[in-house]
Image 1 (cartoon, rainbow, N blue to C red):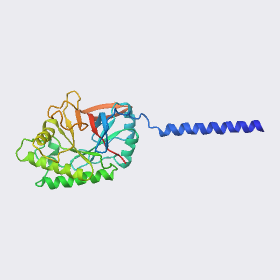
Image 2: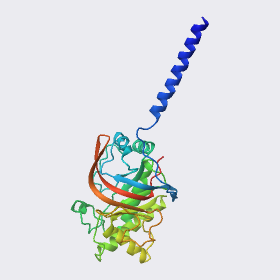
Image 3: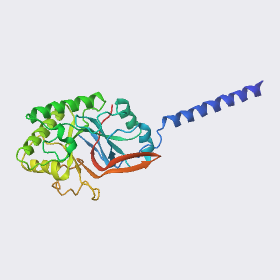
Image 4: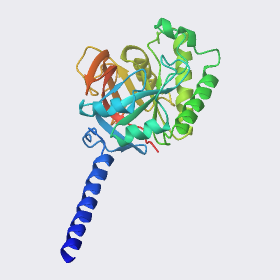
Length: 282
């Protein structure tokens, strides 16, 4: 009888140990993204220093898991705005954002609102800023903050306004676009978020640098500049003064519309080098 009890005890202990191992394996994310180098914080948000990508449609979490070995550590998501190329986001939700966070991904939230009246892209001309750029910028800044909050993107996070390339030298269009950007930025700031701007290095980013030199306030706190077919660098953008938007307030989009595949999952992406704040996901 004693021997039988010992055997039963051994079997119970073995079952408990096996269950613990299985539970730990299930809890661990598959192919989690490695931690970046030390980046510190900015405005209450963690700074990520490393490579990331953005893509028109937020990919399913299974794809993010498969891409855990890609070398990318951040993903840009087009979470709101009337001028998005992919307005119907099949996967993007509060649950998706927490899932991406738990897989180790950092998130760059992008708002694609009204565009400059002198925008160069044909597909953006139907979303022009109107006759009241300051009021419109404020309205869309509130929308950006409220939509971010509804998705669980906490205050202190950056929100990036996507303003596609435009003719900033145009005497009417340039000041109107600047007014919209400044109003959007100041409104996002009042709601507790960090305003950022994505644009072409030769247009919107150059415009911001000239405006900074001219003494304008309410400019975006972070710049995400597109300059393709050059080496990736956040330090050597010729349109920016060496000390401007530093430290930890720059992103370089250095390639676009490239297709990559990891773990059998293919995406068409833009490539970015990041030294900037990322979203705080609740």
